[in-house]
Image (cartoon, rainbow, N blue to C red; front, side, top):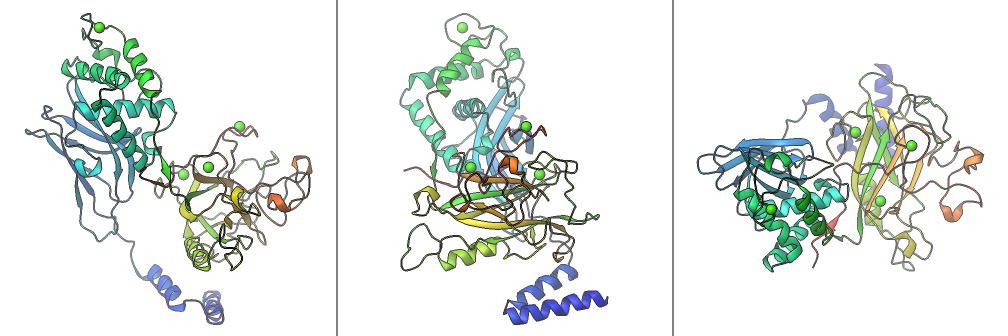
Length: 483
Ligand SMILES: [Ca+2]
Ligand SMILES: [Ca+2]
Ligand SMILES: [Ca+2]
Ligand SMILES: [Ca+2]
């Protein structure tokens, strides 16, 4: 009790002398203690029609994750309800009745803006341009997009919504104009759908192997040469040719970028020196604690002045980004490991924070400097101070927002408490690996010293060899419609 009131009065003194927003902080504090958690938002309901499929099952999914289900009624209309907490990208509608199957892609489904808002009702025509029904045409487009995503080893959800929309429009236009390569696939899909077999024809979740279900081929002539086709080979070849003939179009927002920071809590994991390390050397692991991030704009970020008007941040931009990052307050800005807020996998020990940041291509700046941020992870309870929560004291992690792999997203994953990575002042990276005791921007590091200040590939399987880029989860690059 005395400790708590001391902390509180100290906080008050700090806030008074620092001239911070006292009311806001106090209200947040009171809010946290006095109120029960906010309820979940109302659902989003998606209405559509699948002509000819009566009493069919309707599934809306993202990869293997089922987002919602429904049934078509006697007029082939359906409603699928999805949870209103998260906006969804690249969701697939799959309507089946016996051997009949139609598909449709919804590039973007909005989330509820507030928990107080009533349920949203949306028609598929509002979610995918030109999609009046889920029918043969939307199935053809979906098969093409699914095959393209599969060929690029990505999910439909990883394709930005505007990019998916632009691509579907382009494919539709090419089909309407009589494009031969796409038309071959379209004719095959049309014949398969007109002659339903004993099973649904499209294996939408089949990652390797054919998109066409061999069990659906009972006597169907899908090539149109008069002879029944017993294998998927002709379909696979036609689809491969079609997939090679288009790209997911994307036009990126030029002055902003999506940033995804990931904190992996790996007990028994290895640090950058390939040595076992204790993530709780400084922080204390207690039941109920969770991951937070404390962060702000790094002082070395170029500021706009009368002399420098490009490749710099204005004071307003700095204030806004600092606010996004929580202004270096410990245990206030939450990271997520529950599959929400852009987190890829729930409860895998990888905690996610995603946000949009102002951006320019650092290589285009005179001093090659980009937007630079500093951060550190804390393992604590809401509102805790630094003590026994910060991954290491007296240091910060430094990161320049440079897109190293060209995917138009910055994804940086660190292991909580790893003092060999981008920790700035007392860095423990081994000299044999380029460790010089400090971590600096490349232009400021001494020759032979490693610089680890960008997004980077990581070791995902614990053999101390870097083997892949960390997942951006449900986050996609920021795009605008292509003109
Ligand atoms: Ca045939
Ligand atoms: Ca996770
Ligand atoms: Ca990147
Ligand atoms: Ca590895």
